[in-house]
Length: 119
Image (cartoon, rainbow, N blue to C red; front, top):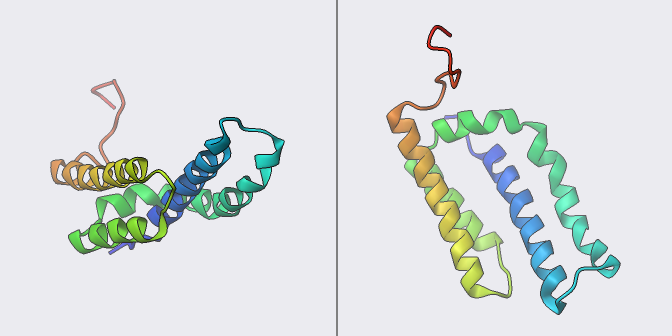
């Protein structure tokens, strides 16, 4: 098993960036006073991109237990004021994790996307 750390790092960055945006626009405008909200996402950027090439392998190797762990981790660590939006984002991540499993079953990972059939 490859693990799920790189998937977590990418999700942590994306979720922290969305949370910063949500907090910044809460007063109806985004301005220089909101720059401090970017500290958390920027701290998570390097871990997210450092080994991003490993994410497809982790997704391909994702077990039901790891998928459940990721889903629980997102729900436990992600919180914004808009509960409806939060549920939609968490549901979207669950969908993405199930889609990754489905694509793995289909054997999509590792196939060439070249339009040339000889490639």
